[in-house]
Amino acid sequence: MKKITSFTIDHLKLEPGFYVSRKDRIGAETVTTFDLRLTKPNGEPVMNTAEVHTMEHLAATYLRNDPQWGEKVIYFGPMGCRTGFYLLLAGDLEPQDALELVKGCFRFIRDYQGDVPGASARDCGNYQDMNLLMANYWGARYTQLLEHIDEAHMVYPQ
Ligand SMILES: [Zn+2]
Image (cartoon, rainbow, N blue to C red; front, side, top):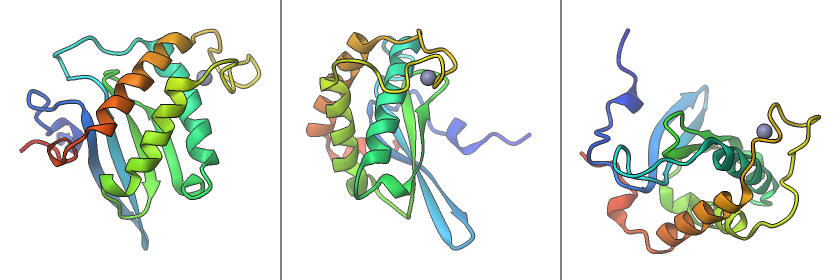
């Protein structure tokens, strides 16, 4: 089998940032997959599953409720390596187009208190696997990164 595109990125050079992973044409529509990279691959500790799970619940809630973007959100979910998340949006987009949306999302994660949306036995397959404090921590860290991001951290390294 062929090596898929996301395995051809040089993860030795990849730093935390906000990247376009790929664009797929489906009929007349384009779907853009964004790489929200929170930790340096193979260079610093990854996120644990409980906080990844909490962040997934909070981000999905925030993104799908955004008045401008909600209808364009195809998917938000974690990378298996736990160094980041993928966000799929309808449209042929660049990081600048979605930067304010993603900043807003991670500020929401940073500041969220109270019951995590969807964290109940009826709504989720493993609802006790949550860590809101660590989700707040990663939310703060990635917000900080996005507020100071430069062009070099919005394009994959060659
Ligand atoms: Zn869940």
